[in-house]
Image (cartoon, rainbow, N blue to C red):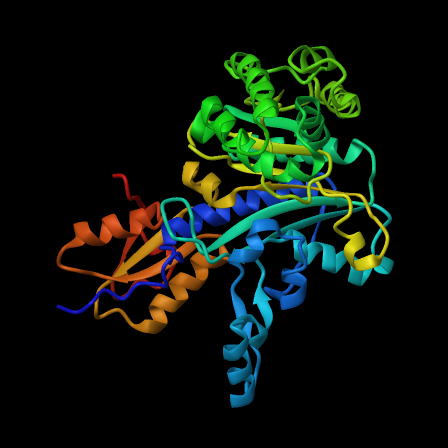
Length: 432
């Protein structure tokens, strides 16, 4: 028996029905984002190796696919082997996200862009993940970013645009969880963790949904036992408030679950965001405060977001403010904040709507029908706005009908010799 011919591990082929669902989602997302004043850009799928490993990508840098230099010599191979560093043979790499390319793009084209630049990027990225359910080595990210706006208006625009996109995709029940990195660092300082341990501590706190409060406290004890116990008390007090509709995004509600005086600037920031969003989000999308939300990327500097949906065991979107990343290229800080929809997870939750507009017609023809006749009929139907496919008649018509129906065709017509006009055809619904 022949071995199955599959795509590389962690990568997928998409059948027509899958591709139609993906294009449907893309159309909605792009349409909503453009209506909110964002402009689509495109960046190369590869970037310089040094840029991809400059500390901007966090742990994702370890998952980067590297591209070998051209014309590698035996001497270069020997030198890399002797140094135990094969990465010196690479000068490019596949992008592992869209944020690093965006910051490079902005630095390259700043003079040609408006003072506040609102971008859309929807494109594939690559990570050397260990393939498993819901994790792929090639997947699509759908990002919007605002660069150049230091105030809370950028977050407001991102949340309102993303919430409308989620609503128009039909994803009822989405909850946008919000936190601020300054609140997280304030909590760590309040508990007694030294600043140099903050990043390590946050990695542990980020595991809360997987290992629970006891597991988090156990790991934090390895950093600072006394501080770990104080963090455990805070988390235990917060957990009940996170059930149901969560903690309202108001200054009073946020302050009520945090130690007095902890990260007041972060609280004020979120309270202002909550006041601006009050009453403007579409039905089926809500926003709440979650002091346990961390987001793993170390470059976040302020507001962070994550989108939960009852039909998904993982988040279906996320992002945050990353002031400072663009400055790595320009030599001066530029405020920036972004929000990404988890496109692959969103597509898995979608159902295509019933077809509207002109019918999709399958023309089933007999073997004695002239090609010129088929082409003329097809041209006439296409000119009227129909989608048309030619199908040779089969002995087992049930199989043919099932296939074209699965491909989205709504009507069928038999073509026989002598039929010269669409008026001669009898279009019948495939459901009949």
